Image (cartoon, rainbow, N blue to C red):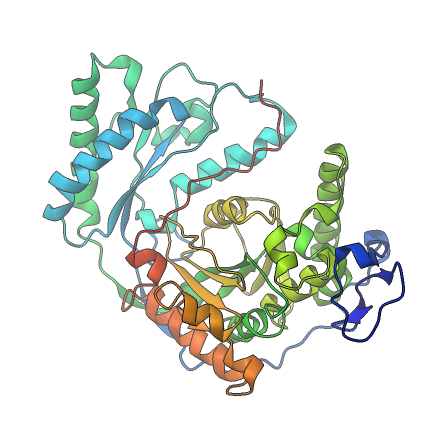
Length: 451
């Protein structure tokens, strides 16, 4: 069985013309050998010209990618503080936020990490790196606010640099006398930060200051021929204009990884890609599964036969640009251009990993539909079929369905999506997920043991 020019699998029994081909009818092919991949043999440099090379963003006081939103982010060291913080944030939004109209939101970074964990295990570096990077997300304007309990394993010293550990940035609940004192301290610190953030202004910036993420979820058989290629075309335009684009999801590139290797600019980048694939192979092996555990019932109902078909469609969202860097989960990029950020494929885990890498906006392709969203950065939804847009007209931002019916080409929808990205990143427009505040929980990837 061949699709996208690759073998999706081998028929277990005879298949008649018109039969529905599903996972039970195919034997998976052997996954590509990552030790024999060729690097830098398919470097495409002729990319489509973007309609613009500027956007309106918030300059990052820490350097690096600019902000797309102006948010007070409140980091936490442990889940234990979530209850108190959530009560305080509710009050902040009612009593403080209206006084500072230039601030878009107040977002608590609640998570399940921080205690009851093997904090010194080698893989603990991943969740700790994610939380450290999230605390300094570009949308937070350089303002640090951290809430600690006081007895957790993820100490403030592990979360922040020494210079940032000050009474102006950190509140330890166990040092305060009672609930009301906690709320008062949180309100007081928040107001100081909000006053500073309220002075931030958007500026006209080059696309080189824009970092976005590409992700897909709830994929169907049309995702790889409409929505994802359209996103890939927009990605090529962004890269041509100087922006940085991340794409991710290890199990959803594993069967086409040799194609990515050919697009790596040099052996160093290729070797990092190899290393990340091997790490994830071992991670799955230790869980006694392989990449075939990835597709969901909805993927299969939407016509995807197996993970190979899903992966080949997923890769299309990366476009054709050379891959200039490969990141481990939650690492920050050091290059401009197209970057592969190795993360789990789970939507609600990939998203926080990309946020930790610094994305200011995410483009999310779907065939089956999902109300997924992020609190820290806007999410643009792209659907693969016209009937998905008709079913969810106020949840889907861009419809790639016309590419399947012949009403539009991939370049048309890709250009439309590019313009949508610039408008949303510049604050001229809100995506539906942002408008309705559809915010998923912050699920931090933790492959280390929980004690």
